[in-house]
Amino acid sequence: MCPHDTGKSRIAPPPPPSAADPPTVLALPDNKLNEWSTGFCSCYEDCSSCFTACCCPCITFGQNAEIIDRGTTSCVTAGLVYLLLAPVCCSCAYTCTYRRKLRIMYGLKEGPCADYVVHCCCHFCAVSQEHRELQNHGFDPSVGWITNADRLNRGGARPMAPPNTAAPMAR
Image 1 (cartoon, rainbow, N blue to C red):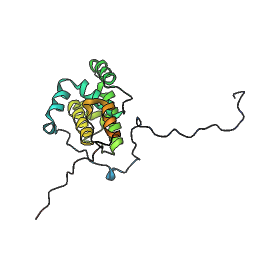
Image 2: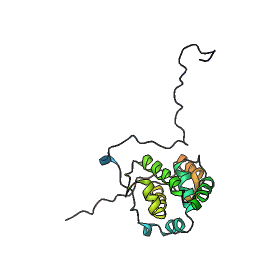
Image 3: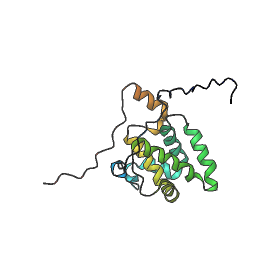
Image 4: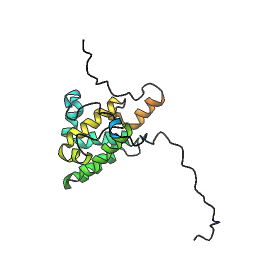
């Protein structure tokens, strides 16, 4: 026991959320989770990010990580960690954690299978899909968190809802 302990609890209230804190989504039942705004293998929707994800995945992943972490992890840091883990085939263990964070932020379904399996089996498609998801929510991962936050704070652009993918109306 601490000699200065008076026996009274000194639990402080949690600090208010800041712009750096990612939004949280309460645990939702599987039937209430949202669909991804693009398909897992929908690279044709954004060929440039798909090309970058395939040729230099550390760049696309780093950009995604910076936005998902709201600037607390820099693009360079995330990309370097990715590069250090890639030669020993452990990068998917790192990158799948960001897929999970993104799913929690937007209440997305886990799919087409578990996050770790998605990143191990088809890493380039996973990173590219995550990049497109961020874009469809109004972020431009290529310019970094600070520019995105400035644009959001000025009210110029707000994170958008994913595009409506409902079936076309029938006659």
